[in-house]
Length: 195
Image 1 (cartoon, helix red, strand yellow):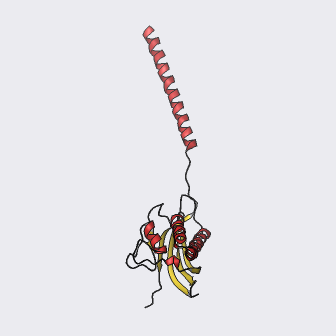
Image 2 (cartoon, helix red, strand yellow):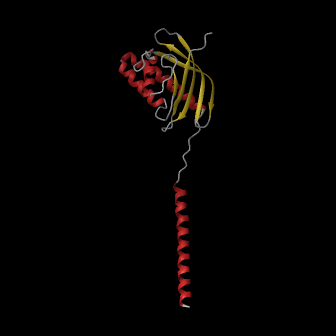
Image 3 (cartoon, helix red, strand yellow):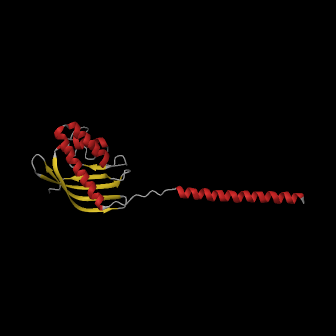
């Protein structure tokens, strides 16, 4: 009889322990669920794409303006442009500039910077040093896929030296950077086919 009471007491305690462990597990699980935040990326809008292209155009003009004062100022501005407008810090950037034959694709920040102000690549004379007084876009179309966007069309560069306008075809790809701003992860630019 004593064995039965002892066995029944042990069984009751074991079951009580399991019940409290189950309750603690449920409570712990509930706490984990409550503290887990779902990270969402806002869908990119066409207005944001338009604004990102305009920021790029303004920045290219600013590099040229700075170059009239001093090449060092233009280089500082170009570094800022490459750091803030391109997605090199986010991952791969596909950059195919217009006036590039020897090294047609620019895979690094340094190569992109060289295209804008000269330096690392021998063929580069500093595209953004022109200076340009106006850059306007004639967008053909935009494709938006929640967390990325593509825009393609023609852009026109007005020379500050001659006043002549140069037509160039472009495709820009954008992703949202960690700072919430759109960053360029694809930049293809070419002179229209003359055939």
